[in-house]
Image (cartoon, rainbow, N blue to C red; front, top):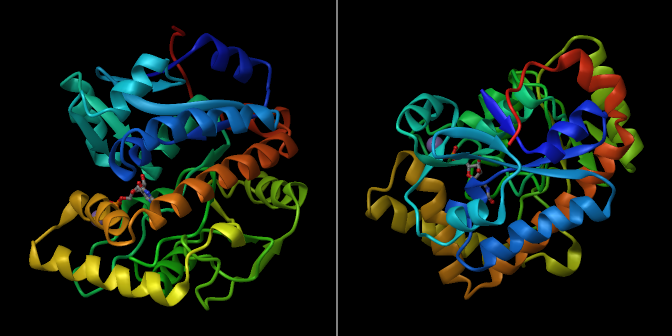
Length: 313
Ligand code: PSU
Ligand code: MN
């Protein structure tokens, strides 16, 4: 069962626009205290654009939407042992009354159970480079859970052509927001062309609505390029990524450790430049997601798709 704060339960019952936010980026994607400040800032940005933020995590075995300051701090400051939770990990984390930070996949699951249609994150997981068959559960979730995920594409630590192919195969719409190109997280460019472009929140909302109205209840990816001023230089970041990937291979990093390892090494290798870019795109995505949530008119869509939520706290 999913537990909502009173504010979020009210917002859902009153069909107000809501934006879900994930917590793996807080616990495993960014260093302290930037992660704590970012979590608070993303919530504030969502509010400033007229929507209610719902940060999602597992707290002492409860899947929660909307966190207190104390709960957010526990996820951010390293004082608790926080598990990285994807679809497969919920049961164990809940049974053990653990703290868990939710990935894109896990955040989509909880958002959908609560009746939330829009979710802002940094970048989705995808098909990793190499022949190791490391494919993020985020992709599978996008194919089966009706939440619109606003992101800056996928990082070029991944195999972006294969990631896009995978999304096409499994029927996930990928929409460029003000771009015809799949953004590659730290830069607006990847050289990969998208089939759909929108220029306004209303256009994005119309596509989301139309897809779901037809009963195609899967995820929709809205990809927003990092703002130009915050973007990193393409060639340099590619070299740095290659270095991080080489180190991961040398140290036999695998499974769920891979993405956090690469992100942390990149922050170190770039002397903090990748961190600044990451923070900037997360805030930008929060603003775009809130505008899409406002344009989506939750009254039209959420009620039909709501699954269930439990008590309020
Ligand atoms: N992208 C980021 N920062 C992150 C992640 C992605 O820029 O912290 C997290 C997201 O929560 C995503 C997860 O769902 O990494 C993907 O992990 P994996 O590759 O193990 O599926
Ligand atoms: Mn993986």
